[in-house]
Length: 343
Image 1 (cartoon, rainbow, N blue to C red):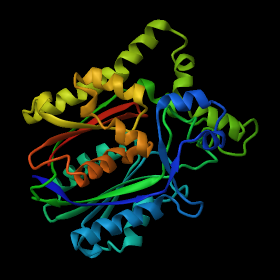
Image 2: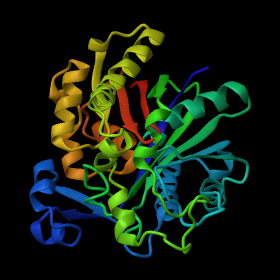
Image 3: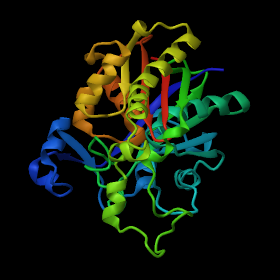
Image 4: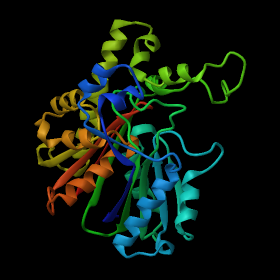
């Protein structure tokens, strides 16, 4: 079973420059945000929500592929965290809105890893449903300012946007080769929000206010607390934080018979410049083989970074037929994931 990429569509928020006045709208930590190196990010309008962005991206991909939505067999929507409503399937809503009336809809919601892991979900569906020919793999991100501060919720500047890939069984270009994921649930609590779930619903007595929720959203501020200020456990975690990324890449390479040195580009999540430098060291490759410059001009789109950067590299002519790229990511769960694609 093989499948490849036929077309890619984008729908991004408005480009916004990272200036002191813009930073001041979100945080007083100007020096910290500046040190990350971001030049721009994308911000959606108040009325454009996550499935709105996903619909636009899908429509662009379908138009580029000259395919009617009724010919799509599978719609996979990958999101990092929040959709518009609770008790609501955003993937099914997307399927309905684009008119993919014959498609199965699947929601993948595993933080910043969801987009990379969605390729494996597509591979599984293609393998077990021989009649499936066309799939939309969609990843979208839309920050809800009530719950998250796009400049304090992580070590990156968060952006709004969606990317849709039209994948087809047997297509030779942009061919999926393998996906590998490492999960370590001992660190699952780093990214959780304390209020809003069934353990502590909104509005209950003693619930935190929104300022507290936003502070809790930053995982790095919680590492020492969750690990009990145990130096040994903290050292173990930080070794795993980057080391598991290399382990996932090595596993994918072993499955496919590909050497790490054969990978033309590592398309990592749009992290800050310091984090990109560290990942390059762990992977044992020059920083230029990552997508750090793209990241600094786009911001972090949750689970959509890799699909967006892949499209930008293809548009710029920086990838040729036969090149192998690795989509790499890590995020809440904790998960570390990689998908290998042959252009």
